[in-house]
Image: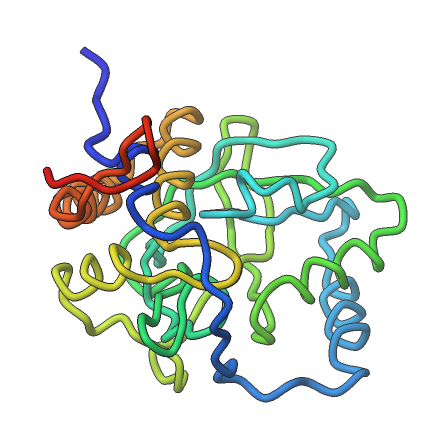
Length: 235
């Protein structure tokens, strides 16, 4: 039987869709030269076949940001998907309820999607991708796909980084994901979108599956929205 998510859109909608309160970002704004220089450095390291791949683990799978001409299921070793980057007090979190961002953390392995970017105007596409992520240069990883191994860039977080938040317990992470709302949206919505699109791609992340159930349990304690009058009622 197909697995049934405990986290649902109705539960996500028990949170405000967004809040206007915007806290500061924790990283310093890079110089104007950072993005083109980082893109140029990455492109100078392209493999001999000239193909440029991005290994995606979360929102890059479902956000439509990547101008890709090919996608493949892929696995990398030595890293795993985790809500280990934070706190986020500006985007899907606020000073009152900070969130956590997803990244790759050391250890294990990770299933994701490898996207091959359109070679047309590749420098501009890569620079736009870098600008959509925290200013941490991606790293090259070896991604195994059904059609063979490819070199890809991936956004990973070293544990010595000052924004590393991977030492929180699962319960602490669930508490944050179930409460964080920012001007972009909620962490619960991000989690739900990620799990849905991974499952659609045939990727079952056991840790994320546990997390969606834990977040759902917390949201079930909140009052539901009445479809008749938009008021809340107890559950």
